Amino acid sequence: MARKLREGLGEDFQASTALPIWREALLGIDWISLRMSSVFRGSGVPRGDGAGVVVVPGFMGSDQYLGDMNSWLRRIGYTPYLSGIGRNADCPDILAQRLHKTLEHASGETGNPVHLIGHSLGGVLARSAAARWPDLVASCATMGSPFRGIRVHPFVLQTAHLVRGRILQRQSGTADKKPHCYSGYCTCEFLDSLRDEFPASVPQIAIYTKTDGVVDWRCCINELDDGTDIEVPGTHVGLAFNLQVYKHIAHFLAGPASYRQSKVA
Image (tube, rainbow, N blue to C red; front, side):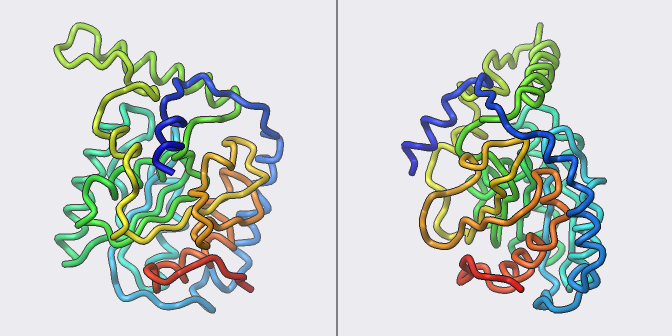
């Protein structure tokens, strides 16, 4: 698996692929289905023990759109924390350092390691944080996160190029230049952590949907054949509001070390 990760992360942001992005228009179905369910109100899922949970937003997003998930986590008995990374449109190594500060704060307040949940690129940041600071992380759940390589819709690729250009422009004239920042060829600690094996001490699940219109779902799974890759129906953006995702996360947080793919009613 490490070899596959290294190969995938060697790709510069050039891997666009024809994905059915029109499916993302069905996001509203995910959102409505969740809000109509008793699960969203906190019924029918295991109760939390007050543990800290940090939810990390995806590419171009901020903590605000994850408000529903944070409120739900509080309802079912956890202590949610905003990621504190700002908008996810900056050097990933800088964002990972901001996330580290949040993990230290949350762990210090709760007295225990913290659960990490990441949506899309936020899940890649979460995995990097778990690999670099495993003593602070109780578990890691990703939702449509391309941690095995970047194969995305051309529109997303174009936006990533714009973000990379802005990062490089900001670095211009500084002593800390990183010419390969925001690419698979960067030598920063963020990418190095993703190229290594994920720490066995941190339980993980990788949630994905084969109807993803933004990211190639094959980049979002471990391929470990141990039940930690979890397929759900729905859209890429809608994974943050997906009823099946919420059910899986509730059961995973209640017993991360033993949780495996299972049918949820």
